[in-house]
Each structure stands twice: as structure tokens, then as C-alpha cells.
Length: 93
Image (tube, rainbow, N blue to C red):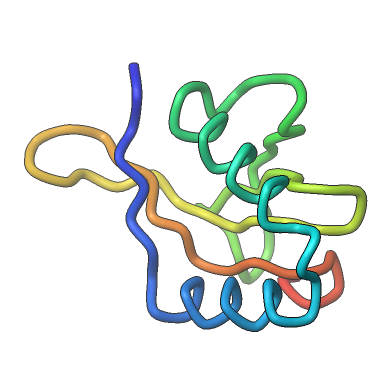
């Protein structure tokens, strides 16, 4: 089941900033988002539930030290993925 990806304003800002300084990362991010939409629990994403201040959110890997933080939400009666932030491990946690 494909899930709709909804970008928060913070995620859109993070993505724009990331792509500006990492021109070669666009394809990797696009592939990760495509895989996240198709199957958020795919092994290549290393998806895991977060604890502490980010409890209720999930994280997946887009590259070696690049993470996407998201949450599952309801949108028009179906489950969607709300993208919250993107950055290095230290930036998003």
C-alpha cells in the first residue's frame, strides 16, 4: 500500500538547504522517499521508532549519515506519512 507523503514546512526547508550544499544527494533522497512511500519498513531504510523528546515519531536512513524523521498520520481517511525533518544524525535528534 502506497502512502501519501506530506511535507512539513520544516522538512521542506531542510530539504532545500540540504540539496543546496549536497548537490549529489538529490537522487538518493528521491529514491528514499519513493521507498518510504511504497514500504516504510523496508530493510534498506533501517526504519525505527524514536524515544524521548521525539517519542511517537519514526526515523529512516537516506544515506550513511542522513536521516528523515516522520510520523504516521491520517489524511482523507487513509494513512499517510508526515515528513518532519531531514539532516544528519546530530541535526535531527
